[in-house]
Amino acid sequence: MTERGNGSEDLPDYVPGTAEGPTPRRPRSDGPILVADEVVAGYVPGVNILNGCSLALADGELVGVIGPNGAGKSTLIKALFGLIPVWEGSITFLGADITGLKANKLVARGIGYVPQNNNVFPSLTVEENLEMGLYLDRRRFGERLDSVCELFPLLGERRRQRAGSLSGGERQMVAMGRALMPDPQVLLLDEPSAGLSPAYQDEVFIRCRRINAAGVSIVMVEQNARRCLQICDRAFVLDQGANAHTGTGEELLGDPRVIGLYLGTLAKAK
Figure 1 (cartoon, one colour):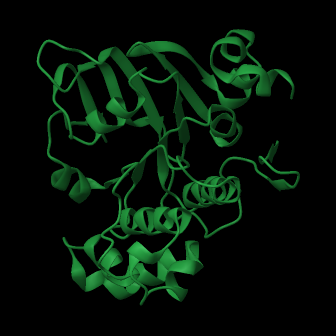
Figure 2 (tube, rainbow, N blue to C red; figure 1 turned 90 degrees about the horizontal axis):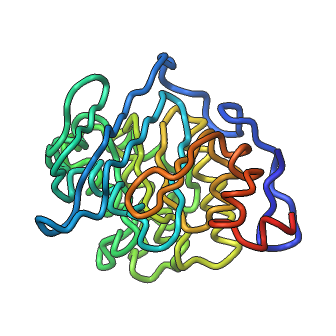
C-alpha cells in the first residue's frame, strides 16, 4: 500500500511490521496487550462522553481511532492513560486491571502518552525535555537518548535549543521523543498531526510507523482519518462515545459507510 500525502509526492511503501527503522526489540506475543472493555467515562459525574466504548491493541499493532468531532476520541485516549475517571467498564494491560491508575504508575508499567496540546516544556532545551521523560530512571538517559535520536535525528541536532523556539512539527517530535525515553511497550498518541503543515503531517505519520516498527505498539487518535487508515493495522470508528465500525485500515478505507460518513469527498475521489 502506498500512502499519498497532501502534496504530489508519494511516501514510501509500507507493510505493517516491516517499515524502515530499527529492528523490533521485543518478541511479539499473541492476543491483545491493552484492552478497554465497555468503558463509560467523562469529565463530570453524570455526563458521559464514552458510552460503552471498547478497544483492543495487540502486541506490535498500530491501531487508529477515528470519528467525527465530539465522538469521544480524545476522551478515550485520556481514559486509557488515567487522566479522566472511568465510571463503568475496565481497562487492562498485560492481563492486569489498570482502571483508574494514575499516569505515573502507567508510565512505570510501560505506557507512554503524547497529548495534543501543551506537550513540551518551552523554556527547557530539547535535551532537558527528553530528560523529563526519564524522571523515573535517569541512569538510563545516555542509552535512551541514543535510541530516541536514531528515530528522530533532528532532536540530536537541536538538543541545546529551547523547545519553545521550535516549529510545531519539531515540538511534536520532542513530545514523542520524550514519551519514548522510558522505552514504553505502548504509546498513546492524541491527534499527532493536529495543527501541522502538510509536510510535517507526512513526517509525523512516517515517524509513527517507524516507532511501531521498532517494537512499540501504538494507539493513535487522529482527525486526519484517511491518512490514519492508510498506515494503521486496524482501526476503530467512534460515534457519540461508542463503537460504530471496526476493521483493518484497508477495509475501512473501502467501506462505503465509513467513506460517506467520516472520510468525505477526498476518499471518494481516491
